[in-house]
Length: 411
Image (tube, rainbow, N blue to C red):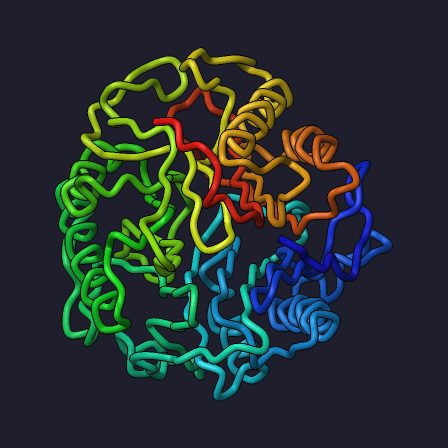
């Protein structure tokens, strides 16, 4: 698939793109207040940093032939919940009447200690998008924030969904009011029921979900929430990434799920290397999660990979204690999986790196982008509390633009 890679800039030893436009779909790099000269706009000022991030996103969208009004989804990562109101109200002013869907995270860190917010945006330019179940934040659990959003942004080929939590869709109650594993499981169950409802309202279904990204605030919740996920996605086999984050929009939230949804066009999605989670290793050990997953999904001109780590495709862990070695193995995995889908690293349009310590980020970023040298993808990076197991120090999400209908489909 032909894609335009726009507004390139230097990062680590490679160039990345501010935006990559493939047809009407626009992928964007995560943006913050970090300037090209290495300085940070608005130190100590969350609203100023938000406007700086949005200025960069706006410039990238304009280069792609669009504007801020074309944004379909935002993932907003904060380092402190106290920054939520100024950040979201700044977004609300800039995106008035846009009604994006959103996911809000508290992360362990951003690429520099002085950064307060990072925004990942997705967009569709030149194709209609319907915004479903729009709402005002001030009506959502009494939050005094001037911000507008929607539950679904439905495009012709792709659906963008608000991150789902244990909150009722009418904000009338919150499931799992405690902080026990069973509360996290109750929140996951309602979140996935909400997801099924929203997909149905958009003319879709759980079987069009290509990828899930699961966020929890404590690894102790992992064994409780994944069997719930497995029940809701039984037989579907999405790819997955699992992250432990510092928190969410409200303190009572323990679980949130993002989904990547591509509409079926002339046939079923191709799901490569299907597996049951109980039979594989996460790092050094197995975990009884009872989920049907796969390693790659081909659909709608995209190849979406499971988050890749230092565990190779034969389930052998590499690079114990060495984040860079793990990143090199993860990119080896990505190259093989893309190849099995008929694509290659040259087709990558977006890579997102997660590390468990900011000290790992420069080496991991360099290892990932070195393998993408000359490709000019979009890129994002976050510091998280943890991954699927303690020995995993990094994970990378990879999306490529490639039509894979004619490729072989190994299971």
